[in-house]
Amino acid sequence: MTTIQIDGQIDGRLDEPTETNPTWTRAAGFSGIAFVVLFIAMGAGIAASAPNFVDGADELRTWFGDNQGGIGFFTWFGPFVFGFLQLFFAYGLLSRLRTADTSGGIVTRMSSAGMIAQFAAGIVGMSLWAVMSLDPILAEASDGVLLTLSALDSVVFFVLMPWTTAVFVIFASVLIVRSRIMPSWLAVLGVVSGVVPVIGGLWLLNGDPESTIGAIGFIGEFVGMLWIVITSVFLIRNAAD
Image (cartoon, rainbow, N blue to C red):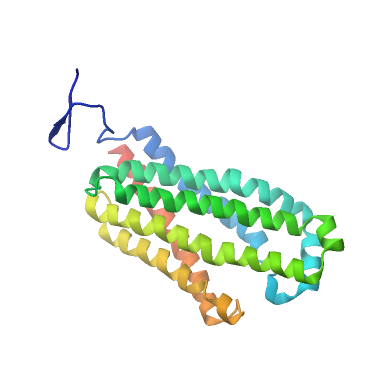
């Protein structure tokens, strides 16, 4: 039976290699950058103008009725383009960092679970948007039903997604520190980008998305996008080394 040496130890079974394919690492970096560019160019343009449950049922009916085409495109484009680009970025990053996981793979798995859960939450949120834009819902659903759907959507986007993203980013930041492949300040930026949006989601408690807490969440989203871009650049550079 062939044995291989991994991290200085002899193991009688085939395990994950200590080096990742440079082509895949580079592709993951470009995927992260593409995700940010497309999200800002397309996703933010639609989501930024969307009302939520605090704006009332009439505003929801008007906006979702006027933007059915854009919402229909976005609910398909979001998960299948934004989602998979981000998943591929996360996979490439964790594949590059996993050799620094001294916890037996627990940290890597926790980070992976966070990203997968975020992807699932995004699909749920997009599905709620799609439901709210349907003609039968807009025409026949009561105000209470429409407001409930919008409230659930807000919980997904401002609570579930920030929390799951924080799990991915914070555990990935732990691996960044341990691996020393990337600078430690990038890990600090990652922790900030994970924690701040969670705080920003607390605007749901006071019902004012334009409050200071809501602004904190917006800043956190910006920091999160910045972290992905910088991390992606380091992935591309590391693949070339």
